[in-house]
Length: 387
Image (cartoon, rainbow, N blue to C red; front, side, top):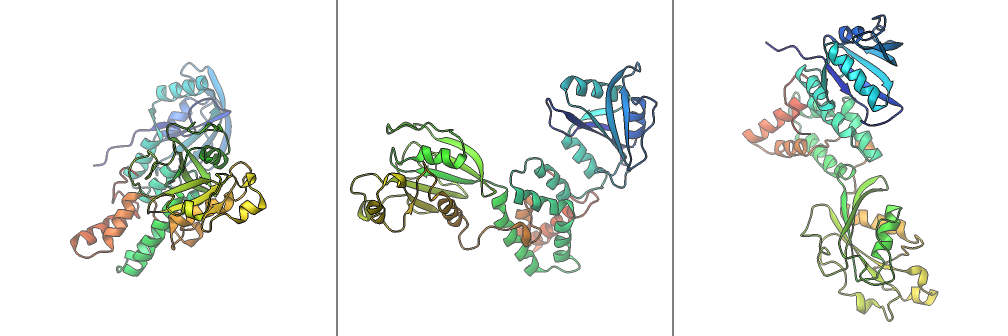
């Protein structure tokens, strides 16, 4: 016999100071609990909104709040839900939580609310995974992909490929599209390498949009690797400014997945020519080569720059758009990134692993397909796990 779910009080807006804080009270006794702390005890009907005073156990007013009610059929966890919009100061939020606990709620967090939705069978594992990922999505394209799991489009695509019979061609297309779409969720590591004083720190700051790395005309100013996460063309990137090229990854360790090395040469070095650069740059792997300080070169010097190297000026921004495009092309290869308009795709490593296993044959492949299908159906068929 399934135990009764506790009535949870959960802060669903970010903690800290703010104009408004949102608190969800979810559970079979949600309306009863909130009624005990509302002046007059009157809640709006499901789907309705009411402005009311919230009081403590002694009847003292704590805050004027907006109350929104949902029934079990529309709420996230498949249980009655009451949302309170309170003023966002920490003291107010703490007082409201104390009143809700007094009234019979159990203080919880967002993960517990998602767990409640899984235990009741109201939502499938992919829906819950998308909810978690949306909370930390940085890419607009990635967010649109996640919404397709919230709307059920992804689950419908999986069920269509597995029921009533397995369609390996459809599964293969989903696997290929999902792997290409990973660029919108997991940052591409871009390692800036090159000789001292080539302008790596200036380029780092130009791409970042603010002065994070120290810039100096003195060679060797950057002594340790500096890393920052940013968006370039809506794509997550982890940019690494190294202490100068010594071969390999510039002191950043061995090879990593989804990594591009960007080798920067100083265009103002006297006598710079193709012969000087023939063996320069990162050995093997995905890489891009650029000649910096274009703004310091005469037209004649520009004309003598070696072929195959992108001319840029990190200081003025000239050529940076082409440089970013070249970095992404080096990372993606011929396949290119998966677009949000190409159809629903999987986004967790767990589901991609299940999908890859499901493309095989034998008992292991059949188990993987069953688990993936279970994750696309509500009803506790598959535990959402670490998503």
